Amino acid sequence: VENNIPIVSLTFPVKENKSWDGNKLNDRGIDEFEMIDINKHYSDAYGDYSKTLKVIQEELPDVYVQSVSKKEIYAEDLGLIYKENIILNFRQGDDYGKEVIESGIKYYQYLIEYGEK
Image (tube, rainbow, N blue to C red; front, top):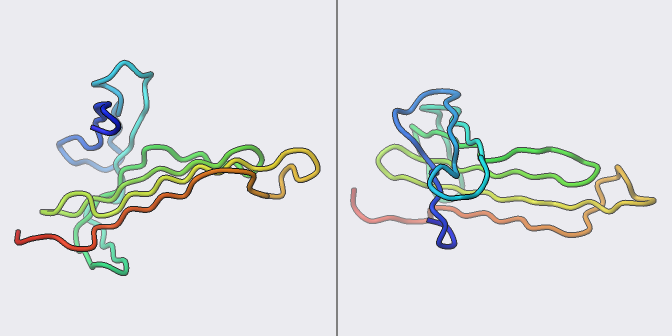
């Protein structure tokens, strides 16, 4: 549940390129999520994980109007270890196509510690 709205962030069984409607449990429109990179190694400044999977929630790499990247990475036996939400709105007019950011958000969430497994 995010902001009191149920979201289907992950579904089973785990399968490469599997897709599903992340909004299946709410009244919002269809939002297709995709599972990729099954059993891939992932590391960041906070940890090293041997078996992970990535969920792409949205990816629109437009350099003219708006660029959107929403993804999550899950580690085996731990759950969510990384989340990224990037929404950038680019300036129009004379700066059209020059990737000059007018507004937006870059949100990163990392698992920094956890209790005993």
